[in-house]
Amino acid sequence: MKPILSLSGLVAGLAALPAMAQDNLEIIGRPVDGLMGFQPAATSLAADLQWLDGMILVIITAITVFVTLLILWVAVRYNQKRNPKAASFTHNTPIEIAWTVVPIVILVFIGAFSLPVLFKQQEIPEGDITIKVTGYQWYWDYAYVDEGFEFSSYMIGAPATGGANMKTPEVIAQLEAAGYSEDEFLLATDTAVVVPVGKTIVMQVTGADVIHSWTVPAFGVKQDAVPGRLAELWFKADREGIYFGQCSELCGLSHAYMPITVKVVSEAAYAEWLAGAREEYAGIPRSIAVASN
Image 1 (tube, rainbow, N blue to C red):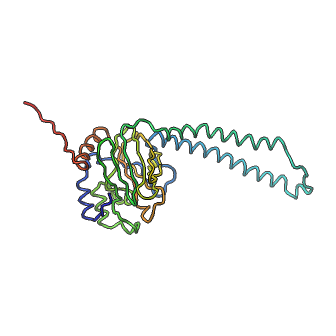
Image 2 (tube, rainbow, N blue to C red; image 1 turned 45 degrees about the vertical axis):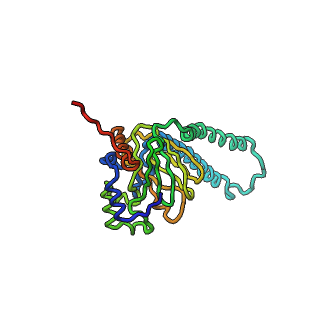
Image 3 (cartoon, one colour; image 1 turned 90 degrees about the vertical axis):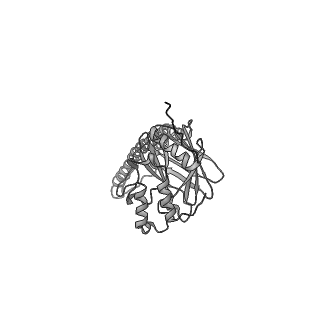
């Protein structure tokens, strides 16, 4: 599925999208200029990873401070001026035992907390919704496996090869038509993955041409999309909103213009979106309830 996008075709496509579930959502997971640190954690996976990062940062900071102070102490205490006659010993058994045992204890301590986080990521639970995502140069294709439809997702303004120079009035108009602002240029896509809040989502990830990587930082997920292989990741978002990601594996000329948009909505909004998506992408008409007299 590699249709050639034209400006008129993209605008028409935006107008035809099932957008019922995409309105009035807060943009939560996105990079912000000038800030440091992680995006707000929207899943337990991301919260665990951020906590683990903070814990390891404390440990490595303590090690760095200790080693720095030790070097300074040795430089002052055992310099040539204070010790004109150098010592001639070659071994210090207690110190050698200490610098072997202490790192082992530290690594075991880190492993005791990091391995459960790793297993939680890698042990894929039963999914409420399964979506197959295929990476192409340079867009994503999403198939809702249990619903029988799929669609492609392009960056708004694609194809882009000029970065900020591509933010033309026409592209800004496309962003606004899709409910974004020009601040979401290079982040927003013409179609988005829409999932309900609080449900387990299993993503089956593969590539169609070269290696890509499906990554959403606020969800704490990143999985290479390798041609000929089907990998899986999972997440359960606990907060409604819009979350952005990016292909995180260098995949060619337009690698930088291959964003990901995920919209987490209420169950009612998801059901409404799903009905429109079935009709839009699979040609399945919506069922109409007829009141009896």
